[in-house]
Amino acid sequence: MKNLFLIGGTMGVGKSTVCRRLKKELPNSVFLDGDWCWDASPFQVTDETKAMVMDNICYLLNRFLHCSAYENIIFCWVMHEQSIMDSILERLDTENCAIKCISLIADETTLRSRLAADIRRGIRTADVIGRSIARLPMYQALDTIKIDTDGKTAAEISDTIKAL
Image 1 (spheres, one colour):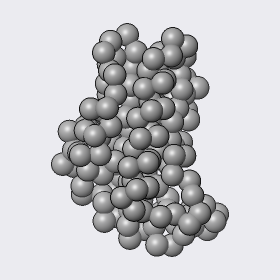
Image 2: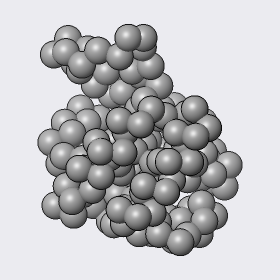
Image 3: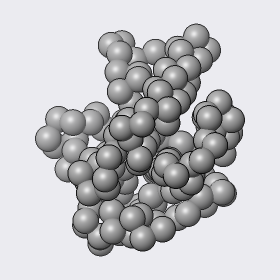
Image 4: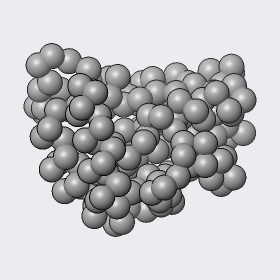
């Protein structure tokens, strides 16, 4: 039985950090960050690029699911709408696979602080704060396990996910 972890959350909530940790802690793991499938300059959101990214994500996840070397497949992305997760899952061969859909959440103060630190380090641009905060309430409506990241380390969050 394989495990597929779909880990969503708004920008700055800690998805990539937690997933990198999970990859090291879970046996026979592989990690795909959805952003890697859309790392372009300039970043363009069109019907064509959106379809391409979804195709790439689903192709890679299916390849990982079919590869005998991997037991734990970890995927993260900004999945703020149920339709995003549903459209990925409907295109995957998840037979003999336990699926864990998780949303990492944080309060506005925590999120502002994390994003401001990223902006100071040059990792993000200032416009990310408004976009990220606007998406916060959307995660409550998703059919996912919610994990509050406020005041928690990546190790604590990873431990919570591994216990699911």
